[in-house]
Length: 331
Image (cartoon, rainbow, N blue to C red):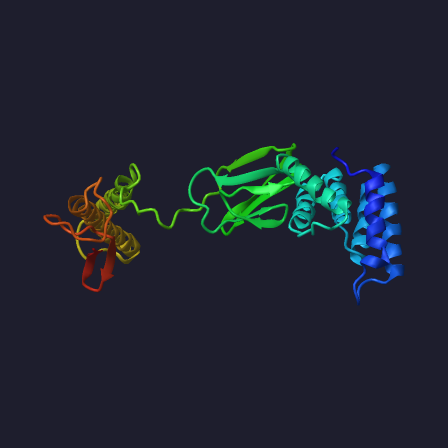
């Protein structure tokens, strides 16, 4: 019979309350009688399915006088409340006890019942295993119902609702809620939370098109600047020629009249601007061509020199000097 009968429990409590079993310094007869009263109340509450109150009575009785039936009914109360892990602890405590051969029969029967019931309870304990679907779990922390857990290791749980949470620096928190039935084991695989594996070998392969893009932007900018310089030089040159032609018509012989001095100044300014624009445009075009030759598109971006190839240009600068312009590059 799975449940210890009320008659056997009463018999066990009678033994526990008997002064003849007392040891010097042990509970007094009054304390033993109080323990029996609490256990009687606990049994009544258990039979009316008031398991939380029944556990409290049996726990108090055990605190006054130890008796194996107290532990048995404490385990049964927790079982009925769905707290299987706590029930298993009470069963294990009872089974670990050394009960003498001459102990009251209800004491030995309580231990035998605990052995059978614990074996059945083990199969009903649920569990969850949390893994990271890709990458590494390095730097991530895992909790199950707020308690720290280990990735890839089964966490035993009572049946019911549970919460799995993963957090880590640089990663948004991930949370999963699940409901487990009796004996159910769930494997939770989390996507998109794996941190880079610090033990993984580094890759030297450039991303597709990455080297080409890096090696084209610089020369393209210089070619664009060169084209703009030539366009400005051409425009200002045409304007300067127009001003010079107009000035020649007004001043066929030198010196020119003072009222035409502004026209002469404008023609000279446009001429200088055209010259500078042509110089800048030409240097930019030349710089772009040099860049393309020394660091052609598609070359791998690397700081290490490659045998048989000039070092890659990292930057080009156009400097205005007192005596002219200078194009300076850095490898």
